[in-house]
Length: 202
Image (cartoon, rainbow, N blue to C red; front, side, top):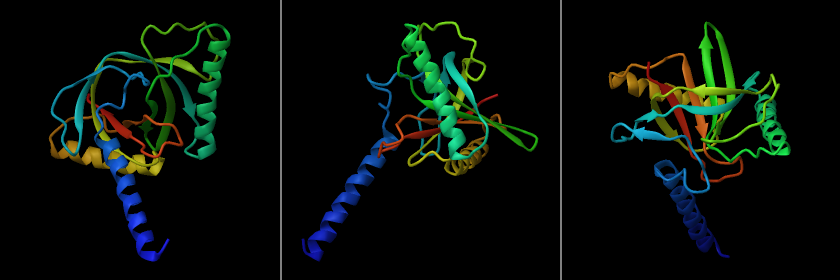
Protein backbone atom coordinates (compact mmCIF):
# COMPACT_ATOMS: atom_id res chain seq x y z
CA UNK A 1 0.00 0.00 0.00
CA UNK A 2 1.56 3.37 -1.04
CA UNK A 3 1.75 6.30 1.35
CA UNK A 4 -1.22 8.17 -0.14
CA UNK A 5 -3.49 5.14 0.16
CA UNK A 6 -2.21 4.52 3.67
CA UNK A 7 -3.16 8.08 4.65
CA UNK A 8 -6.61 7.63 3.10
CA UNK A 9 -7.06 4.31 4.91
CA UNK A 10 -6.02 5.75 8.28
CA UNK A 11 -8.30 8.75 7.78
CA UNK A 12 -11.24 6.49 6.95
CA UNK A 13 -10.48 4.37 10.01
CA UNK A 14 -10.32 7.47 12.21
CA UNK A 15 -13.68 8.69 10.89
CA UNK A 16 -15.18 5.27 11.58
CA UNK A 17 -13.86 5.17 15.15
CA UNK A 18 -15.03 8.73 15.84
CA UNK A 19 -18.40 7.81 14.40
CA UNK A 20 -18.70 4.95 16.85
CA UNK A 21 -17.72 7.21 19.75
CA UNK A 22 -20.18 9.92 18.76
CA UNK A 23 -22.90 7.33 18.41
CA UNK A 24 -22.12 5.98 21.86
CA UNK A 25 -22.30 9.41 23.48
CA UNK A 26 -25.65 10.25 21.86
CA UNK A 27 -27.19 6.80 21.91
CA UNK A 28 -30.48 6.71 23.80
CA UNK A 29 -30.81 2.96 23.24
CA UNK A 30 -27.89 1.75 25.34
CA UNK A 31 -30.30 -0.37 27.39
CA UNK A 32 -31.78 -2.57 24.69
CA UNK A 33 -33.06 -6.13 24.80
CA UNK A 34 -29.66 -7.56 25.79
CA UNK A 35 -29.18 -5.09 28.64
CA UNK A 36 -31.52 -4.65 31.58
CA UNK A 37 -31.16 -1.24 33.23
CA UNK A 38 -32.89 0.72 36.00
CA UNK A 39 -36.15 2.35 34.98
CA UNK A 40 -36.21 6.13 34.87
CA UNK A 41 -38.22 9.02 33.47
CA UNK A 42 -36.56 11.85 31.56
CA UNK A 43 -37.63 15.06 33.28
CA UNK A 44 -36.36 17.67 30.85
CA UNK A 45 -34.93 17.81 27.36
CA UNK A 46 -31.27 16.75 27.40
CA UNK A 47 -28.73 19.42 26.48
CA UNK A 48 -25.05 19.12 25.71
CA UNK A 49 -24.14 19.54 29.38
CA UNK A 50 -26.47 17.27 31.38
CA UNK A 51 -29.92 15.76 31.67
CA UNK A 52 -32.28 15.23 34.60
CA UNK A 53 -33.77 11.80 35.31
CA UNK A 54 -36.22 10.49 37.89
CA UNK A 55 -35.19 6.95 38.84
CA UNK A 56 -37.54 4.47 40.46
CA UNK A 57 -36.43 2.57 43.56
CA UNK A 58 -33.78 0.01 42.58
CA UNK A 59 -31.86 -2.89 44.12
CA UNK A 60 -28.10 -3.45 43.78
CA UNK A 61 -25.43 -5.82 45.05
CA UNK A 62 -22.61 -3.75 46.52
CA UNK A 63 -19.06 -4.24 47.77
CA UNK A 64 -16.36 -1.80 48.96
CA UNK A 65 -13.43 -0.56 46.88
CA UNK A 66 -10.60 -0.21 49.36
CA UNK A 67 -8.47 2.17 47.26
CA UNK A 68 -8.37 3.63 43.75
CA UNK A 69 -5.63 1.21 42.71
CA UNK A 70 -6.59 -0.96 39.73
CA UNK A 71 -6.09 -4.21 41.64
CA UNK A 72 -8.58 -3.07 44.31
CA UNK A 73 -11.16 -2.23 41.64
CA UNK A 74 -10.64 -5.68 40.12
CA UNK A 75 -10.93 -7.25 43.58
CA UNK A 76 -14.31 -5.58 44.03
CA UNK A 77 -15.40 -6.82 40.61
CA UNK A 78 -14.34 -10.36 41.49
CA UNK A 79 -16.24 -10.30 44.79
CA UNK A 80 -19.44 -9.37 42.96
CA UNK A 81 -18.81 -12.00 40.29
CA UNK A 82 -18.20 -14.72 42.88
CA UNK A 83 -21.38 -13.68 44.70
CA UNK A 84 -23.33 -14.13 41.46
CA UNK A 85 -21.60 -17.46 40.80
CA UNK A 86 -22.60 -18.72 44.24
CA UNK A 87 -26.19 -17.64 43.65
CA UNK A 88 -26.23 -19.51 40.35
CA UNK A 89 -24.78 -22.63 41.99
CA UNK A 90 -27.68 -22.56 44.46
CA UNK A 91 -30.23 -22.39 41.66
CA UNK A 92 -30.70 -18.62 41.56
CA UNK A 93 -29.03 -17.33 38.38
CA UNK A 94 -28.43 -13.58 38.43
CA UNK A 95 -29.66 -11.70 35.33
CA UNK A 96 -27.19 -9.49 33.49
CA UNK A 97 -28.05 -6.03 34.83
CA UNK A 98 -26.40 -2.76 33.83
CA UNK A 99 -24.81 -0.36 34.60
CA UNK A 100 -21.83 -1.13 36.81
CA UNK A 101 -21.87 1.69 39.33
CA UNK A 102 -18.99 3.09 41.36
CA UNK A 103 -20.22 5.44 44.06
CA UNK A 104 -17.90 7.80 45.92
CA UNK A 105 -18.80 9.61 49.13
CA UNK A 106 -16.44 12.22 50.54
CA UNK A 107 -16.44 12.55 54.33
CA UNK A 108 -14.01 15.21 55.58
CA UNK A 109 -10.73 14.30 53.82
CA UNK A 110 -11.68 10.65 53.27
CA UNK A 111 -13.08 9.19 50.05
CA UNK A 112 -15.18 6.04 50.48
CA UNK A 113 -16.03 4.07 47.33
CA UNK A 114 -18.30 1.12 46.55
CA UNK A 115 -18.92 -0.91 43.41
CA UNK A 116 -22.49 -1.98 42.64
CA UNK A 117 -24.20 -4.18 40.05
CA UNK A 118 -27.83 -3.55 39.20
CA UNK A 119 -30.27 -6.30 40.20
CA UNK A 120 -33.26 -6.38 37.80
CA UNK A 121 -36.79 -6.39 39.19
CA UNK A 122 -38.25 -9.70 40.37
CA UNK A 123 -34.82 -11.32 40.70
CA UNK A 124 -34.90 -14.12 43.26
CA UNK A 125 -31.82 -14.68 45.40
CA UNK A 126 -30.75 -17.24 47.98
CA UNK A 127 -30.11 -16.08 51.53
CA UNK A 128 -26.47 -15.24 52.12
CA UNK A 129 -24.22 -14.54 55.09
CA UNK A 130 -21.63 -12.80 52.90
CA UNK A 131 -20.31 -9.74 54.73
CA UNK A 132 -18.25 -8.44 51.79
CA UNK A 133 -21.24 -8.14 49.44
CA UNK A 134 -24.59 -6.76 50.54
CA UNK A 135 -27.94 -5.79 49.04
CA UNK A 136 -28.42 -2.05 48.67
CA UNK A 137 -31.64 -0.20 47.87
CA UNK A 138 -31.33 3.10 46.04
CA UNK A 139 -34.47 5.14 46.75
CA UNK A 140 -36.60 6.81 44.13
CA UNK A 141 -35.08 10.18 43.32
CA UNK A 142 -33.80 12.74 40.86
CA UNK A 143 -30.37 12.32 39.29
CA UNK A 144 -28.36 14.70 37.11
CA UNK A 145 -26.43 12.85 34.41
CA UNK A 146 -23.43 13.70 32.23
CA UNK A 147 -22.21 11.27 29.55
CA UNK A 148 -18.61 10.72 28.43
CA UNK A 149 -16.63 8.20 26.42
CA UNK A 150 -13.36 6.34 26.92
CA UNK A 151 -12.10 4.49 29.97
CA UNK A 152 -14.00 5.37 33.15
CA UNK A 153 -10.89 5.86 35.28
CA UNK A 154 -10.98 7.71 38.60
CA UNK A 155 -9.19 10.63 36.93
CA UNK A 156 -11.63 10.82 33.99
CA UNK A 157 -14.57 10.46 36.35
CA UNK A 158 -13.27 13.21 38.65
CA UNK A 159 -12.85 15.55 35.68
CA UNK A 160 -16.42 14.91 34.51
CA UNK A 161 -17.79 15.26 38.05
CA UNK A 162 -16.23 18.71 38.27
CA UNK A 163 -17.66 19.66 34.86
CA UNK A 164 -21.14 18.46 35.82
CA UNK A 165 -21.01 20.29 39.16
CA UNK A 166 -19.98 23.46 37.33
CA UNK A 167 -22.85 23.13 34.83
CA UNK A 168 -25.35 22.48 37.63
CA UNK A 169 -24.13 25.49 39.58
CA UNK A 170 -24.44 27.73 36.52
CA UNK A 171 -27.94 26.35 35.88
CA UNK A 172 -28.98 27.13 39.45
CA UNK A 173 -29.55 23.47 40.39
CA UNK A 174 -29.19 22.18 43.94
CA UNK A 175 -27.20 18.95 44.30
CA UNK A 176 -25.40 16.73 46.82
CA UNK A 177 -21.81 17.95 46.51
CA UNK A 178 -19.98 15.19 48.39
CA UNK A 179 -21.63 12.23 46.67
CA UNK A 180 -21.38 11.05 43.05
CA UNK A 181 -21.51 7.85 41.01
CA UNK A 182 -19.81 6.73 37.83
CA UNK A 183 -21.85 4.38 35.64
CA UNK A 184 -20.47 2.26 32.81
CA UNK A 185 -22.58 0.24 30.38
CA UNK A 186 -19.89 -1.69 28.49
CA UNK A 187 -17.43 -4.47 29.12
CA UNK A 188 -13.75 -3.67 29.60
CA UNK A 189 -12.98 -4.68 26.01
CA UNK A 190 -15.66 -2.58 24.26
CA UNK A 191 -14.33 0.03 21.83
CA UNK A 192 -17.28 2.42 21.88
CA UNK A 193 -17.56 2.86 25.61
CA UNK A 194 -20.47 4.78 27.09
CA UNK A 195 -20.14 6.13 30.63
CA UNK A 196 -22.13 8.47 32.82
CA UNK A 197 -21.64 10.56 35.93
CA UNK A 198 -24.60 10.64 38.31
CA UNK A 199 -25.08 13.39 40.88
CA UNK A 200 -28.20 13.24 43.02
CA UNK A 201 -30.54 16.09 43.81
CA UNK A 202 -31.16 16.75 47.53
